[in-house]
Image (cartoon, rainbow, N blue to C red; front, top):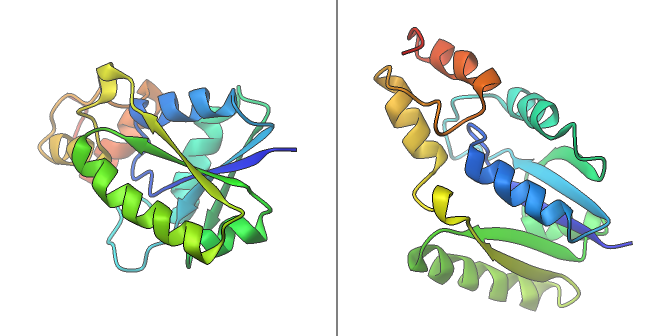
Length: 162
C-alpha cells in the first residue's frame, strides 16, 4: 500500500489546499493530510479546529485521513509508514525552499521521497495568509475558502460576513 503525507498548517484550509488533497488522493492508496502543530507560530485556529475542518472538507474522499503531528515531518512520515511526502508549489521561491527541505529529508531517510505538485493556476496566488489578511478587514473570502468555513473564519476576527 502506498501511503503519502500532505503536511501543512492549513490555517485556514483554502481551495488551493483542497485541490492539492483531491489530486494527491488519486495518486496513492492512502493520503494522510497532517496538520503541523508548530509552537513557533500563533495560529488563527487550534490544531483540533483545523483537523475538524479538514475532516469535514475531505469526507467525500474515502482514502484520506486527517491527522496532526509535531516535531520533524520526516520522523512522523517514518512513524506513519509513509513513503511519500507531498508538497505544493505555487512559485519558484516555493521550489527553492521546498527543494532544500526535500534534500535534507532524503539524507535523513532515503526511503521517503518528496513529490512536488504545482498548484492549479486558479489557486497559484492563494495562501492561508492572504485569506487571514482579507478576513481580518472583513473582506470577501468566498473565492478563497469553502462556504461552510467562512463564518468560522470571520468569527475569529469578530467580523460579520461581507
